[in-house]
Length: 259
Image (cartoon, rainbow, N blue to C red; front, side, top):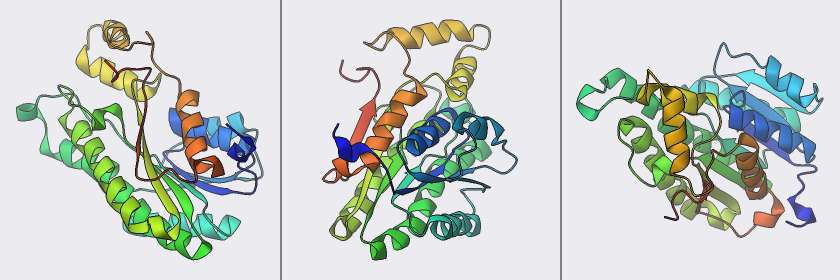
């Protein structure tokens, strides 16, 4: 990647910022010169993120519920007021839900996954795009998953939500490309993270490590990815090097869906 992949002078907004991928992305963006507003759910601790980033002066943190439109409007307004613009929006907040077959999936849990993973992504774009258009453009990276590309037993809510994110992304990308607002998705495979520990425990409560090993065997790379590997793709998509990339789906999965 060329020199333009640095993010000096850019203002970024990241939701789900206290999670594994969110935190790795915030840290990388700061290292590459961006100023960052980091958002996560009410009650979260930002202490590990702040410690990892060395209490950077260009980092602002905020608690917000991404399913609440007023709170979404507030976090977008804070980002705009903090740094004057929003050049990069990593629309990353998401939850996995429980592991159940469709007949056994509680409706309340299903609706909660869709609220965070789909409505949250929609609301983020709804309020960020009007900031980006008058400033001359920007880059939105929506968090999907390899679960947005194929089905997965026991994860119907998560799979449905991640398919929906791809549809939202493509529609919004087509709407706003002429205004130089680029919108893409990243689609990670299994990543070493709390979320995967939760899914492993849901699949195999008595032996989550066995589930981990079985998942890893389905990946040509032979291992889970790291949050940092996803963060590097997100940072690239937010950089000027990605100026002609729009409406696309980028798997970061060790070759999982190449076979």
